[in-house]
Length: 216
Picture 1 (cartoon, rainbow, N blue to C red):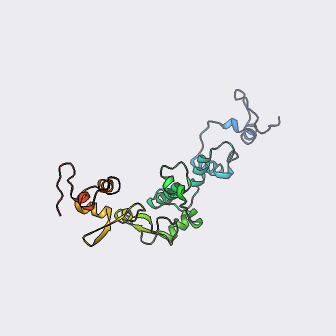
Picture 2: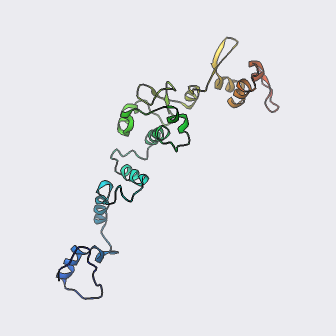
Picture 3: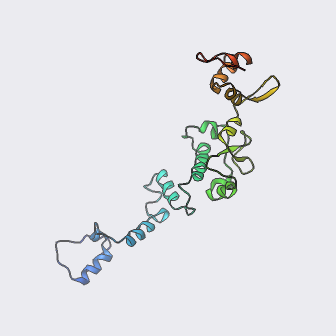
């Protein structure tokens, strides 16, 4: 009897060893549920990854295809903080569903073509990287590229935000964030007093907050 590919085997019948060998090659359903060795499982997994999978691009959603592609990366840094920083950069510039897209991609901020690959981003930015630093653009209206990015502390990055304004008082010029820190009030309170309530600098600096008296 000839066995065709996909032929369903009658499991209730007895077969010779020769017939069983033919069935193992011609009917995948015969061995469905049987235990495979770890080596066999690994071979099957690799054979079905990415574009080798006959269903790739057909039944998979874009998210699944992206996950499959990501799983095949060879740099071995997927779980590192630097990789997550790179991925976050791409999301806020390219993904319209990202919560902060309107502050980046929504106003024209882009990621340079070279940095579309993590390996290039890592090569350009690994120097000077520390776990307590964040990725900062020198020109907040410029794109993400090697000539416009640096590693900065959160304080430095906050001072470099496009909505941070400078205040000059008694001959000293500094950012609103630093003045607020100096007088022991939140930058939000100072910002509200100066730019929404239109208070004078002295009123904004010295008016007590919730019973606290600020001294200079």
